[in-house]
Image (cartoon, rainbow, N blue to C red; front, side):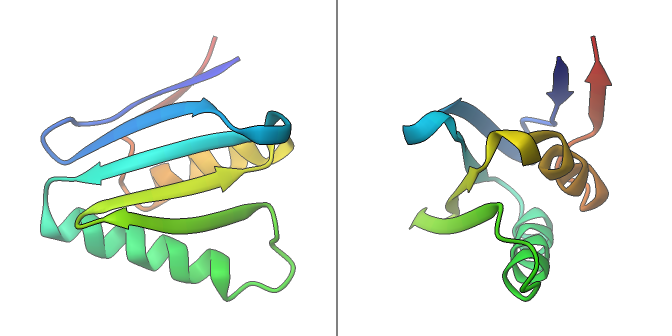
Length: 92
């Protein structure tokens, strides 16, 4: 199992099960720089024709959603870490 930590002053992350066993992440951004990093991550995913494991959506101002295939969850968490939206990813 892999867990993660985030700075709630910067971003709030909520993870839940979506349809067909997929993982749904909802993000509420609290800092403009974090929103730019999330948009950069989204652009990387959407511009990669080989990467079809993540679908992004916008829920409202400063609120975003990502639907992730279960077999890509850890890779997605590492992308969030790469873009400094998470500050720790741990295997327990």
